[in-house]
Image (cartoon, rainbow, N blue to C red; front, side, top):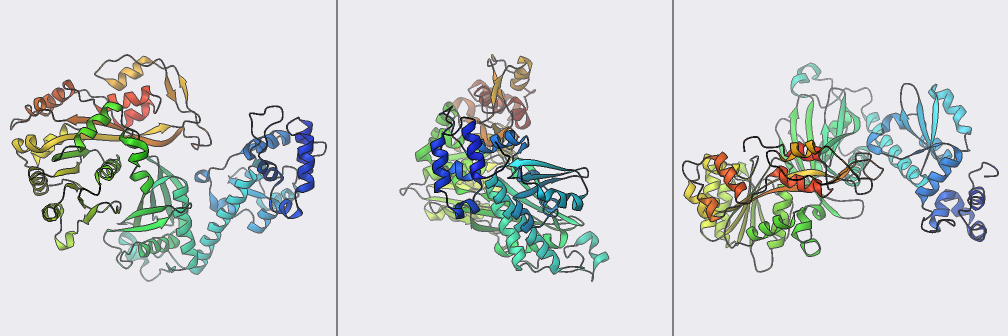
Length: 594
């Protein structure tokens, strides 16, 4: 720029001189843009809004990010990319008021013992620096941020900070109200209270949920501690610290969510379950399943987020292969299983391995108007209009076995049993299969062959297993590499052999690795995909099931007859560049008993 000034004219002049924008376009914009638009939008936003392309490089659009990068380089400032999960909102918003930050287009983004980092939108307007320098008494580092993002986060962070402050002022001078169990006797009679219906608390809860939706979180954890409550999100299977809330506000936030989920707010000594139906920022309907648990410092609350668009995939658009991340052969086996008119299909795996997604996706595919699909669940994971769903209620002695017995009188074609936990439930599932119904259920075992041992262990005779069981699918979820930043690289063949032990297959020429970028929050991963161990019970495999069942020999026979173990299924995903060897080894370690 001829003169370092961050105005529309000054920026356009510099862009023209660097052969990025044509002079005619620059003159047109400066004459057409009104004073009101200039006041409400940053010059870079106005230019990006014209959707021009680079004059010297027509393939490159002049996006807001590209223009921000250009201005950062021009002003010799580092470019800052917002990652809300890595920011301490309370510390950042305590540096200056919203009015002051908004006036100068600045936002503190990092506060440490040695410095304060402040994001700016105008690198040449620094009159605020002397004043803040006196207040913080630390070196100040300025970085340049996308003006639209800074504006949005400025409003969001100061809004939540104001809500926290407002809620805190309600109980000023009072001690935390959520002391339970271990410390209750010590603090009895000294506690304060923040009303769960207070508008500040309502704002905090609303922000928390919308924030979780926007960050693709699968779970929200609200955990009370002695002086501060922790809020953490699980994103792609990994926990992230999000916010620290004062203990008294934590209790009020939990009470507010319990009210929304129709739980007993007064009952804090025993676990409770509930559900909330709400809307995401873009208007999509989302369900949250609540679970409360008493801990040493009060109630801990976990909200499991069920996005119907993610949970129940669209078969018409995707097909089973893409909907569940199945390989072609796996898709054929699974389609064959769920197309049978009767029998039992089991899905196994630990909690959080995607069993619910697999079952609901398959049931959604099967639930045509000509078919009666009934489920018994504990709890109902997702309310689906195409199913007839019943929830286990132990207080009235409605368990899985009783539920299946009831469903059999409801003229069902397909029955989904949430989990086979005991002999009675297993016997009712077998009875349903023998009387001509297709039964889908889950078991908690480490692999597919172990499901046979588990059924035998809970008392199902071997002849009934062979008569009713169609097949078993064991599954895990692995994080998928970010498509924006992954790249291929050579690797040590010994790593590949460690993954596929005790088998040997030729390794791929190259594998993809995570790099880290803005899209994936520098993690290198976005989303997760399933790996599956498909075991269809053929007549030959059924001959291995008898009263003297040997799991190791049975597993060897299943592999000999075509079952692909989990680590080999994961190796396929690695060879296709979808994930890494390390990710597969986390959930499917190599076998040493084969």
